[in-house]
Length: 202
Image 1 (tube, rainbow, N blue to C red):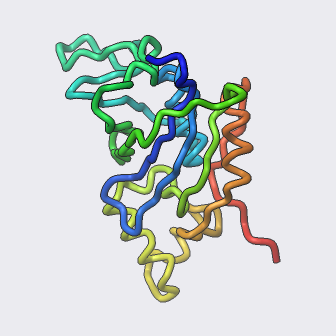
Image 2: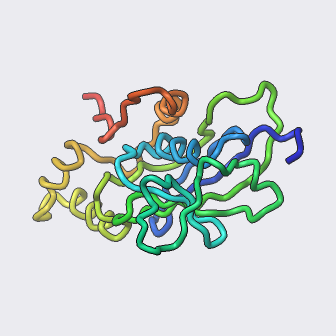
């Protein structure tokens, strides 16, 4: 990697969800994929409570202690050994999978390699759109059913789904300042994750 590059701008979007849920992030180029995992958790306000892996060029990268089941499945490579800087000159898109079950596929596209002064100390979200789906909602298709239920006060599941989502859910919610606060705290011990959206002030 050219020594001039010290950061990378990424566009990350959830697959199979319309309208798109996405973030544009700037991440230090020397960070490894295990750190990018935590950045994505903070950037989308996930709670880091499910299995995850990266899929790059047909290979799997992740936490060997969690993903190597010993049953002869596809080999998992250690994601602590792969830096973002290793992607210079290679394919510009790969996938991050969160929650084996709901299967939230995050499509990560490398937009630009950057030379920043000073060298960034943490990731930053530049812009984005829409709230991430509730944890354990069931994946993209079930998320559509969830939204239908909370929008229709006469739906049989309206009240139950709202209670499950913390009493409030706005699919258009996006708080750039809150996300960047979470990104600055990404590596702090016992960092608090936001299970539900903040309720609007009365």
